[in-house]
Each structure stands twice: as C-alpha cells, then as structure tokens.
Image 1 (cartoon, helix red, strand yellow):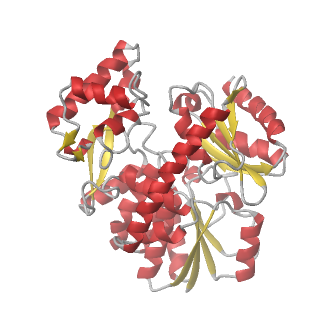
Image 2: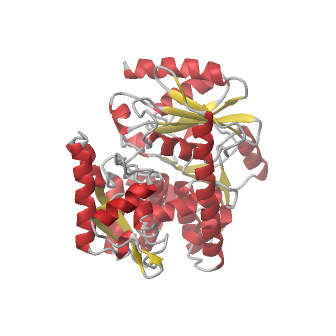
Length: 456
C-alpha cells in the first residue's frame, strides 16, 4: 500500500491542475479536506466538489470539464478501469468490483485489508498525503475523525488495522490522546441523563430511551445532574462518579442475562483532539464526525470543509446551527418510522420513508433503528427514500454478528441493484444502492433470496 501511495504521490507532484471529487459523509469530508490541504501546501491549482454517488451525470460533467487530473477520495473504486478520457487517481476503501490492477488506485481491499474497519477513505488519502510530505502527519487527526465517522471503531470498540498506524502518527505529534472511557456518544456535550437515554451500544434494558429512568438511576447513585444552572456532562464527573455509573450499567446487563462480550462494550477507546477546546463537539472524534455529517448531507459542503481546514469562527458557528437541525431531522425521522412501521420478511426488515426523510440521512436513521429496543437486530434493516433524481435510495445496515455469519450487504445490494439497472455497493456491514421507483417490492424479494443464500 505504501508503494502504491508513493506512486500516486508522484502523479500528484507532476500535475498542475487537480480536481478533487469526494463523498458527502464525514469520511468523505475529512478525506477531501486532507487532499485539499495537501495540494494547497504544494501550491497546486486545485478545486473540490462533493457528490452523493458517481453516477453517469457526474462522470459526463467531469469529462466535459477535462481536468488535467481528477482525484477521487472515499469513492471511485467502482469506476476504476471503466472510464476513458479521464485521468484519475483514487484513494478509497469501499469494496472493489474486482482485483483490478488499475495503476493509480489505492484501496485496502486490493491488498487483502478490510476497508470496512481497518482503514477509511480519509485514511487511504492520508497515506498518500504522508508520502508527499512527512510534515502532513498533522492531518492524521482528520483521518481518525473520518474512521470514527465511518464507525470503524464499532467492531472492537476501538480502531484497529492500519487505523492504529495513523493513530500513532497523531499521538507522536501530540495531536490526539486515546484513553479508555465509556463508549456512549456525547461524552463532551450531552447532559449525563441524555447520554444514558440515547445509549445504544449496548442498549441498556429499562434505561435506553427512557429519560425519567435515567434521572432516577443517577439519583439512586447520588450523582448530581446539575451544577448550579448547568447540566453536568460526562466530562464533568469525578472518576468515582464515572465508575459508579459504569458498574451500575454492567450490573443491569448481567442481571438481565447479557453475556460478557456485550457487557464489555460499555467501555472502549475514545479519541481526544488535543488542540480543540474541551467540552465542544470538536474535542471528541465521534462528535466531530457527527458535526461533519450535519453539513454536506444537507448540501452545505463548504461548511464542513472549512471546519476541517481550521475555521473556528464563521463556519464553526454555521456547522453548529446545521447540527441542531440535523438532530431535529433524525428525531423526526425516527418518529415517522415509528408511526409508519417497519415491515418484516424472513431474512430482512424494511421501511419506506418516501419524501418524509432525506435520502442523505436514511442510512443514519436505519442504523439508529437497528440499535433500539423495538427493532429486531437478528436480521438486516433496509431503508428506502426518494432522491432528487426521481429514483429510490436504498440504505442497508446490519450487525457485526450477521457479518460474522457470512452476510455481505455490499455484494448483495450491488448484485440485486444491477438487475434493475441500478448501482450498489459499500461495506459488508453497511451498504447503499439506487434503483428505479416502483421496483422496491421486486428488489426486496430478490435481495432477501441473496441474503438468505449468504446466511445459510
């Protein structure tokens, strides 16, 4: 991979005009930011655009504009060797269509490394950046944020594989601190009772989703939930208070018959960005990634990019406003699905949001649903939503247990979407596709057969 990264770095150095094309999620934004900053430091003439997917319209436009070099980050593997009249380099991590030896394609799957959890799109882009100039190690925190945004720490409750090499770069540069702490989202910014209320990895019986139960649990443990007029957050607690809460949650899980493997998920590695202000969304890698998701997924591409590039005034304020709206949209989306219902088949379950949930966040909502008490996580969940092109966006999510049993959502969605002249791909645990309207039921029937054959 290092040799391939070096070859791509040489191509970049020999080019004057470079256009970056990246994805609209946290991993795509951080990958794009790493590429953009790298080129800026080389004094290259560069531009950047964010896309939902590499459809024919995007490729057609790129050919028309005829850039000297196009750099795809966090996407592009699907078109390697298939695009003529377009000089490209690719730093991606999604499942490759084949073991193509396209020369300027850096993807972990080509080297028998799993891109679902060992390195992200931002990580692959960082490898090239580091080959261009060792001083670019200061961009390593962005690669860690990208990996966390892609949930690459979920498998082992910590980052693994090549992500740990990037993490070492960040630690040596005194930019990131990793420590063992509670693994629930919102350590820096959520009031303690809200952190417990929205806990989902693992779900706590009688606690997750129940605000009053969370407040009563804290009262039982004699932990103050307020300091004056301010809600106390996890980072405001003493070491003893944190221990009390973690022990109580562990006891609840054990009493309810949950095994050691699930109980130990309460704690894991967390990644602190040392140059950011404590108590802000930028101080914790997971919260930083969520902030980025709230920008480009709503068309505000430049906002997330500017935050990654260091703007802590105008664009950070804009991103925080977008984050508020993003959270409200997620709550509304979850309520909508609760009202409309999730429909179960034998080997999958699904919901159809139509125009009620944006196609850019339907995957996030599917993942959140899979981690609630009300949803069966023994089968994958499929979410549908209409996109701006009059097509149907498909988002699929599953658990690690299902992947360990042989499930590969990426290949299942790709194979099924192709039947309807659609496109699909992603990772074994999380994947997406685009299909024509009106074909959803047929799609589900064929997809279920494919999933059944994988699991049996």
